[in-house]
Image (cartoon, rainbow, N blue to C red; front, top):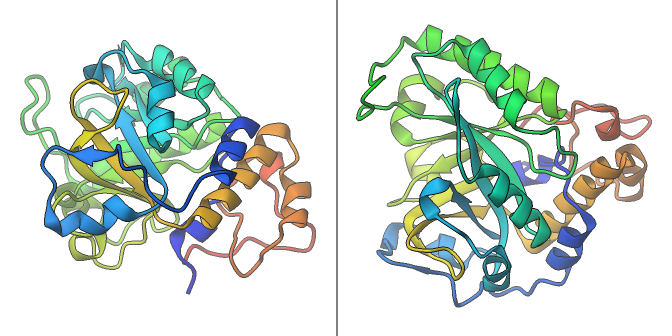
Amino acid sequence: MYSAYRQFVSFAVGGAVVLTALGGGAAVARSLKDHKPHKGVTRAHSMPVQGIDVSYWQGDIDWQRVRGAGIHFAFIKATEGGDHLDPKFRQNRHAAKRAGIARGAYHFIYWCRPASEQAAWFIRNVPNDPDALPPVLDLEWHPFSKTCPKRVSRSLALKKIKIILAAMERHTGKRPIIYTDPNFHRDILKGELKDYHFWLRTVAAEPHKKYPGRKWAFWQFTTTGIVPGVPGKVERNIFNGSWSDWNLVLIWLEASGTGRGAQTASRYDAPSELSWEFCSGVSCAAPSGKTPRPFR
């Protein structure tokens, strides 16, 4: 059986990030902490490839310190609905890249706005950056929203989701990642969208307990993380794999960013471990003679 992280090959990050990861140690940095650790997610703290997700609410981030603390990837809020751009998005995006941290942008869905408008807003504000992680679509209910607390039907929700996912993929050439929480997954996503990678929120138990049968690539395991360089608390995440797995991802990403995806795939061919179905662009083409395998 193939783990989700071994199919994660449609990303592209710069060479500096590859070198950083290849030189990483096996131990998780001791400076990464949690203000309110929960025993149900203890394993996440010791998993090797650690990351964060941030927005305007984290204030001014010292990304060099973040990298030095042992953070290897970051998901950065970009847009929400059809008219909101996170005030810190551009600053965070550029600074994280300069620090050598693999980074991706996420869109926070707004159920009272047409999907086409949300997709257009994301495309308008998030560049097609070849060395970025795939885009993320953040899917949650908004019960405390002052402007749109309503829940839509399952069929309408899935219709909106698929429109935005397709637009993100056309824009970036990368299969988007889906972020969600247990409630929304139970109501809308259970059994759906099996050919996408998932980033799952669960802060009191491991993913297999909250999302039975759902394969995942990233896990948000706390909202009260402490990371040097980030003022106050920050959400922490882990990648579902080893250092070797992460380095394979980065090798493929670097190749995608330089337009050498197919050639690099041949050099690092591991057909029992990797698949190509999350690539959309020519740079992500499968090696000659290979065919994409279905998501497992």
